[in-house]
Image 1: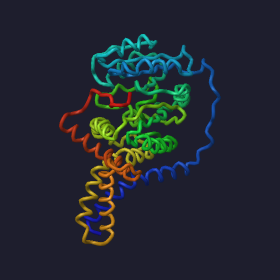
Image 2 (image 1 turned 30 degrees about the horizontal axis):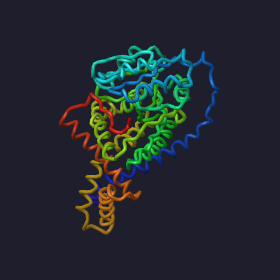
Image 3 (image 1 turned 120 degrees about the horizontal axis):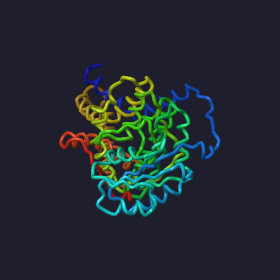
Image 4 (image 1 turned 180 degrees about the horizontal axis):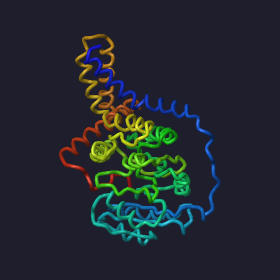
Length: 379
């Protein structure tokens, strides 16, 4: 095999592995561990439940903040063991006033500094043993907080994320389908060595384990691997459920992911994710398979495409693989015009993969992002 052919098969193989092979390997590893039956604890009395601070960072959220506060105060959790903090990140609208009028226990009116800065400020003022976090446009089920904190009964657990369901607005975005796949993977990771990422809609961290992160970082991505380096587990609680509106159009989803990916590179490269020190082997395997290879996907695709062209005269198999890649590109281009499922999937995959490279380009040109913007159509 020539070096060119080796590069092609390596890049193509890694693409297939991270999206399809990794979940299958993960499933086999989880099955091999043959864990004992999960302990099902009864519903604990109020006196045994931890004190929780639910923190909602908000920027110009006057449209939804009253509903969010009402949803939080209606949670099935002892009111005397629960506080609600709204951290307004330099909002220029009525967010702070409406949150206060709706019954939030503490409303912080902060200068504009970005989501992480607002969360750091709220964490300093929080009095709970557990710090829970939610987006302003997320709606939690009544038992979500109770389910979210249950895994903290294990003293080795430092972080827990719940399940987010995206409500389809009928705009052609397949993010909801992707998240169903993603949640299945995270459930297996949780059973093996711990999740490699969470989500902003519903998650919690033990107050003693909270890490004040720099502005360009992200709780969703940074907490799981940072806590793993400290010997703490990060789990997925599928029964702790929240809902959010999905970005209606795929173009809006691309813009949202592009903004997110602009900050990913500081976490992956400069934030310590790539350093293997203090990771347990299984967790390092998860990070490599689920995170690093995913973020390298656009560059692996480019390498596979270019080497495939150079190999076209070296056997029929390369004609087949080249035709497959062209079909994927054609499907992505046609997906916006024809609402056929295979074309829509191709378009979603191409645009979300391209958002990774676009985010890197933005990071190189503009530096790390700190402020945050709402995704249009999600309120």
